[in-house]
Length: 215
Image 1 (cartoon, rainbow, N blue to C red):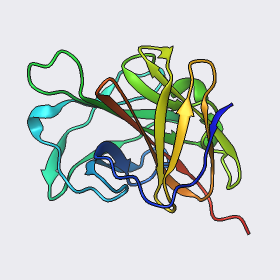
Image 2 (cartoon, one colour; image 1 turned 30 degrees about the vertical axis):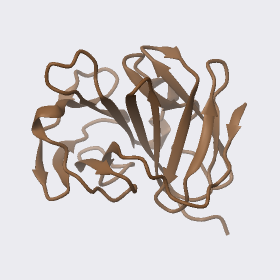
Image 3 (cartoon, rainbow, N blue to C red; image 1 turned 180 degrees about the vertical axis):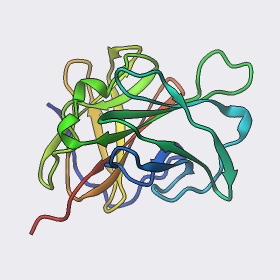
């Protein structure tokens, strides 16, 4: 496997966008707070994305139609809400596109799992756009586990450099190949931001490792 993580000594410094949620593992019927964030140092958002570049923000779960999520700009981020109604993997998707642009400037996704027994890695990727997705279930991850991470454009897996920033640690820099994923060593629990860029087009993925530090 390509790119087993080596922890770097400083946080990631690139300006990225991402979707954050109040809970990565809610129960059916819960209302999630959804945040569109942008900045240099995850999980802190420094800039609220402008209305005219938010092309699409929606939630997808297998077997149901996509649900649009409306957000409003508040201080340094955009805020909205989503009610989760069924078990499964919810993929929250954000597309940022400049007015009159033909292709997105940035595509962000966040994984939300309702009932960890319903966590299906096959639901992580839609095969559309520029996307990052894990190759195994995130709900069962523990400190010390390895997580494969793929980069793809319209379903075609690609080579690329990935930056992984955990909320409880330091950044890791990985390499993915079309035939082999990057491999992230899980060093702490909490939320992780993964980012990549391909020919000036960016993408991000947020997922949560549920639990506590290993004894």
